[in-house]
Amino acid sequence: MPQLDPASFVSQIFWLVICFTFLYLFLANFSAPKIAKIFKERDSRISGALQSAEQARNEAVKIESEYKSKLAYTRKTTALNIAEALNEINRNSKKQIEETEKNLKILLKNSEKELTKFKISAKEELRQVIIETVKLATKEFIGIEENTNKIESLIRESIRK
Image 1 (cartoon, rainbow, N blue to C red):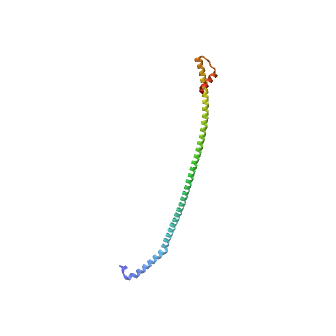
Image 2: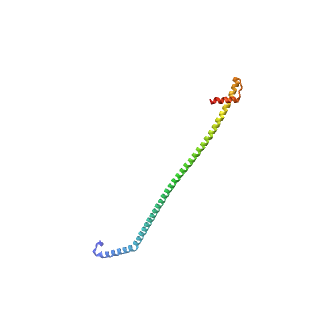
Image 3: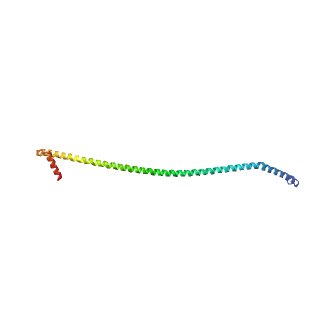
């Protein structure tokens, strides 16, 4: 095998140093800067994406806190509006109850007045019917026609006793 022959070692080492030097220079001058550039671009993209993500997260946290504060304010305002509406309903219902009671009292007084008038007129009509009945009964059974005033005075006396 010629690779293991000690007489060819010097030429092999020479070509090895030349190849490795050429390969090193090629990689150091051409490939390594391109690879380094790719890594820098990748790092800048990643850091940009991380910054964007952090900004988006901060904005989301801000929006969430604004949402929560607006929601709390809306709930508080709604509760106050509901309480105010309930108070207004209670006041209005109390007013309506008072008005209804007032109207009922007036209606009751008017009804009592009408009942009193009806009672008086009924008594008067009954008195007239009794007088007429007594007058007719005395004429029919006794055959005497009595004076209306005399019958009226006798009825009053008998009612008083």
